[in-house]
Image 1: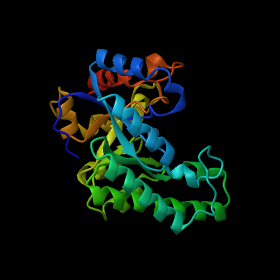
Image 2: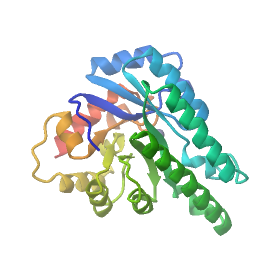
Image 3: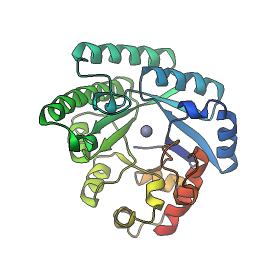
Image 4: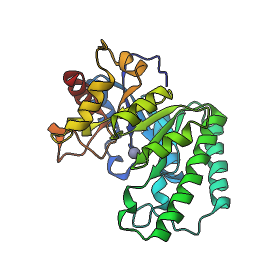
Length: 271
Ligand SMILES: [Zn+2]
């Protein structure tokens, strides 16, 4: 995925989540102070996607992604909507998201988050796993069609399903970022080779993330990278996933886009 901007971008955050309502101006200012000049705010359902657009209309630094999180089909998740949702509902969502994009072309810069989440399957019955996997894949493919229709990048949420996600995205002429990537070297290489990007966040700064740091060292071995754009051109994108996943030196605090600077500096330091 190509971005021709040599600025620090938080490529995955949830500024539209409730906890930020009072402090959006503050977090935008903090980000700018830290050289983080663009904030991609990711929708997780129809409502949050709409909210993201209204926020991006107030702050030129904030750009919107619209989409439905795969956890809507994960029993036990806060987002779970039930298995009675079907093809009709998915089609309805496609139309709703299409309308949102059509009406807000200057504000919507991407689709997501969308993808597959098999992390939660561990303690679920075989039947639930199958239902969930099936609906998640249909919803994911709907987003890929949407990204294709509007020629927009996709922010992928993939947990314990990276290989399957990659297999699916290869069937579409779409690009984007595997946000919060924590998979192995082989998968990471496959993602980059397919023209997709990897999202690096606070996890890379955690003391126990030794293996993940090794994956990136190996991927970028020998490359001379200095500016943000060098990383983007190599398929590496930085993100906070705010309000989650505060980096090592900010653990216990609510994460915010300004911390992309910390993550970027840390990452440059490990190469
Ligand atoms: Zn997210």
